[in-house]
Length: 338
Image (cartoon, rainbow, N blue to C red):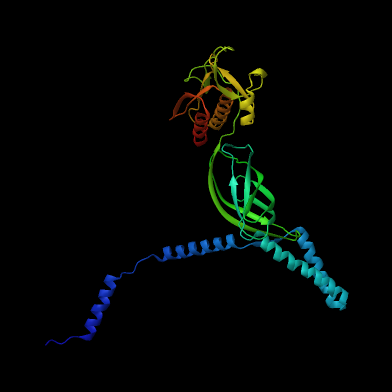
């Protein structure tokens, strides 16, 4: 029987272990993963717990309280100690009620379907209170990333929600992303501001700033835009549809029932009434390209209100003239993403 060397057998086991379980992972990658995990944990902590900042009134209150505390220690007067106790009690009550006021609150946006760069769009911010006991009071909500919107909800009942109007304004066209909403309140005494950042991601498409300008006549290959002459109007034709009222339209052509149902004055169109065919062109590049896009947006908005058939031609896209809200939105989307 051959002798077995224990040292050789141990070395063979070590080599086998090294082969079957190789060392994997990059130290740099591991450090980055640890950093991302800590960052995610910190973000989660910040979204679950409230942060506190003293208001101007709260700073003065704390200064006065500190002064009363120093006076009580120097004089030993029981009356001064009683005043200090009341002031400290107010701080305790303020913290307890303020912490409960923001507990469990959520928020969401209600943004208009159409947003134009540089134009304030009125929407709403909703605050949700999932608690079964205790309403929430004086809740402030504002955007942290884009839109510069802010709102204040006076009261949110338990297991309910309430909204407040908010205006979103974007400086640039194109896709705009949201990330966080800051929910805060200085309830009940306005001494301390408590707030918490909520992760409420979202994306909206912002159309270019509409710049209204008088269109020029011509074909689809001439100038920035062109239109065909408007046809005649037959006041006795059959009913063919409705369009929004424009300044200068005869009042007798307003359809009362449809206007009352929609909430805006609507004018009747007759079968013999033909609208214009308008071509809007944005071609080439250069310093005036943004101005061309703004003018084109203004033309689309203006002619869509008149019920005209609008076509769009760019360097790599072409839409034939058509009418309707869906076609209008398709035109504005192309202009926003140019």
